[in-house]
Length: 250
Image (cartoon, rainbow, N blue to C red; front, side):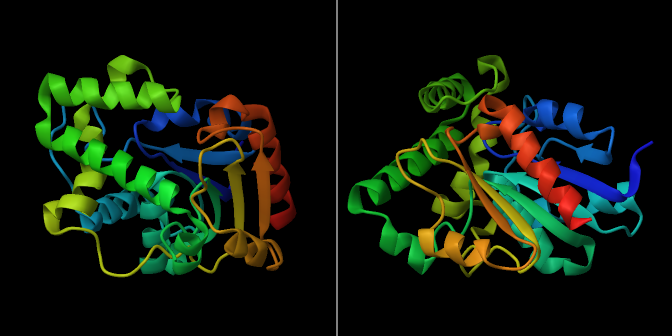
C-alpha cells in the first residue's frame, strides 16, 4: 500500500510528457502515491496556448481532485519548476516540500550576474527559436522543435515532440495569452531538494542561491554528472537522492 502521508506530484517541462517520469514512478510507487499528468497543450495535436494562470489552475484542479486537501510533494523539471513554483506560491497550504530538477533561481539578479554574455545570448536564442517554432506551427514548426530537442539530447521520442509544446516560450517572449506574470522566478520557501546536472553549457541557477539553499534546514543540493534530463540519464542516482531526502524529511 502507498503511504497516505506521501503524495508525489510530478510535473514535466519541454518537450516532454508525463512519460518523462517513468523511472521515478516505478521506483517510488511502492512507498509513495504518485500522481503525474501531461501539461495542457503538450498532448499530441494541440495548438492552443495556455496562460500561466490557466496552467496553474489546471495543476490545482489535478491536485485537488486527486488528493482531497492533502499536502503534496512536488517533483518538478524545466517548465514544471516554473509552474510548480508559481503553484506553491499561490497555494502554499497544499505544498509540503519540493524536489526541483535543474531549474533554481533562473533569471534572478544573482543568476544574471553569474551568466556571461555568451550564455545570455544562447538563452535568448534558443527560447526565441522555440517561440518561433510555436508561431510557425505545422510540419515546419514540428521539425524545428524536433531538431532542437535532438541537439539538446532530450529523451522524448521524436514523433511525440511538436511545436505546440513550445507555447510557454511564446507566452514569455511574444506576450501570447497575456504574457508572463510580472516578477521574477522565485522558488518558494519550503523544504527543497535541488538536483542539477553538471554537464551543461550554463546553469539555470546561481551558485549563491544554491549555497544559501544548501544550509537551510530541511533543504539539500545535489549535483549529478549529467545534462538537463538527469532523471533519465542518471535515473538510479537521481532516484536514490530523492528517496534518501524524502525518508529523512518524513
